[in-house]
Amino acid sequence: MAEINVTPLVDVMLVLLIIFMITAPLLMTGVPINLPDSRAKALESPKKPIQISIDAQGQIFVDDDAVSSVELPDRLTAIAAKQTPGDEPQVIFLRADRALDYGAVDKLLGELNRAGLNKVSLVSTAAAEPK
Image (cartoon, rainbow, N blue to C red; front, side, top):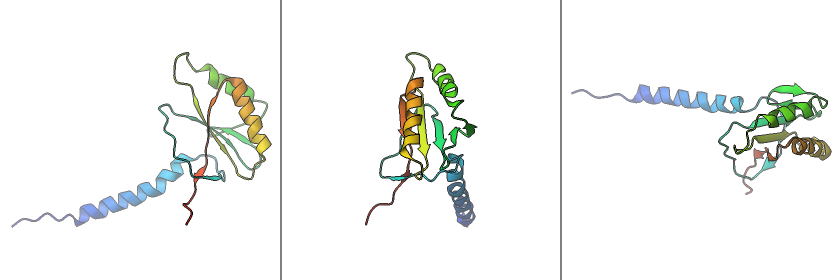
């Protein structure tokens, strides 16, 4: 009488699950920023969004590249120029450190608006449910 032993399969699947649970959050962020908490739902986007981050010192990053405030307008204009008319507008994920002054975030939002990048999502971490 032959029996199938599923214990090794379960062991392998649990190890893979643990590996994916550990590595998935590491793949999401490139610039370490202490984001504010929020209870908002996660956003879904058909196109890969461009992440613009501001760390606690005010350094600006476009995806993982550090950009000076002098280079930023040209970089944003180049991103906006890649859009084709009638196509879905480019989505910008704005990540700002919670210790940052609101004026720095507002200034960056103004630069995004001036470049024509108006589909901006502010990124925050998911807050724990209140008890």
